[in-house]
Amino acid sequence: MPEGTVKLSITEADRFRLRNFVDALIAADELEIVETPTELADLTSHMDGNEKAVLFQKAGPEEAEIIGNAGASRSRLALAFGVAEPDLLPELLKRLATKQPIKTIDKDDAPVQEIVWTGDEADFTKLPIPFQHGRDGGPYLSATLDFTINPETGMTNLGCRRMMLRGRREAGVDLNAPSDLRAIYEAASGRGEKLPVSFVLGAHPIDYVAATMRVPVDETELLASLRGEPLKLVKSITNDILVPADAEMVIEGYLDEHGYVEDEGPFGEFAGYYGVMKKNPVFHLTAITKRSDALFQTATISGPYIGRTDTAVLNTLKSEAVVWRALQTAIREPVAVNATGAGAGMFNLRISMRPRVPGEAQNAIAAAFGCLANVKNVFVVNDDIDIFDNDQMEWALATRFQPDRDLVVQGGMRTLPLDPSLYGARVGSKAGFDLTIPNDKRSSIEFTVPAPPTMSGEKFESVRAALEDGPKSYEQLMAAIGTRDGRDVVLALDEIRSEGNLSRLKEGEYCLSDKG
Image (cartoon, rainbow, N blue to C red; front, side, top):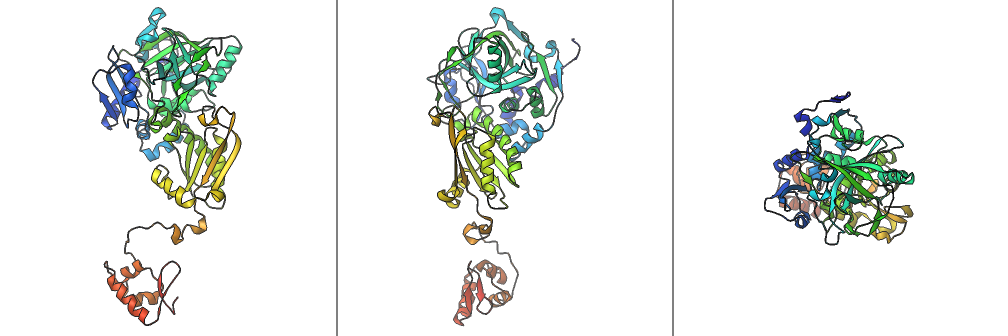
């Protein structure tokens, strides 16, 4: 065994294995199992809009096992982190702040290298790769995590992107969107150098969350932190890149030095539409390593049910983490953040806060605008609104917002180029919606939400005695004499009224005229 390596026990090897997470999905009733044979072109129709993850037990002619939609709901991501849904973002932030050790293991102890295909054996068409959308340019690997070493820093970069098959040993890799891998590749191709890449296929949802983050560290450290436990890595077979030893499979190779030369696309994009044809680099396959019982993974990316796709839900956590950190310096009491899945996990953002002084909601809006280019529409509410409840958000927009007073629009801002509403423009605009209630209005009756009576209050011998004590609401008067009927209070008030000694205050309380 090489110096500096450790032996990996079976228990440790499987703790973050995707197949074991599938078992957790079954226990949580979060998985639909398709037992009948399913063609690869038919997988998407089973997954689109499905509220559950889907396990195909007999996919394609080889009757392969394929899992899809594994990370396509907030409840499943919470399950992956071992917390309840409301605790998901706090748990993520806590883990980000806690470093974990990283260990390198020997290939003989790495489950992901139980089977190794190199040379002619390394063949993309041996994998059950689905054809997802009717106008896609070909079959795509849609759930691959790329591990790359930045030659300039020596640090590992981790990302998540798709690969379009071009043949047995070539694929197009989408590097058009701004990303660390794009910058690393363009620098390498500018030097006329190939860029080695190892793609993990079949990973725990936490690994995909890590791949969405952009943190200025060696991102294997980020992966270890989010797992919350020591991370075991193994060196790839045909390059020097370290990858998780517990993955289902790894696709090794390199991006050639020729740059953006190959037509790639169309493909369903995360915003719910097709992406246009692009020029992209070409990936050359050198090896495939995998477990002997590897579970193939695919991800949902586009279609009419964006809020139930892997990409949108994974984007939500990244967006929320970035915005939360910005809010902590911009306002005094942020409460919660929700980047909606239906907004592709980034475009539409909701913020709950406790405003202390006028203008804090606008400060929250400005912070969200500036900290993340992808954010486009920001809705800020008081903490009485559940920002994960669409009906409550609609209600707040309908009853607390005046466009000429509460709308903030900022133009000329950097945005995400893949936003189809830009029509190809390089900059865009953002909108903020201040749905908060001014502090001096919070306790007023026009912003008090009606609720069933509780009949709580001080007891008195009579309605008159209660009013002699001071103004009372009708509910307080009922509580005063211990009635849950109410008609007896009507009669008592009518008697006092007939004496000309009954008045009402601004918010409806009854009082004796000489007490009012």
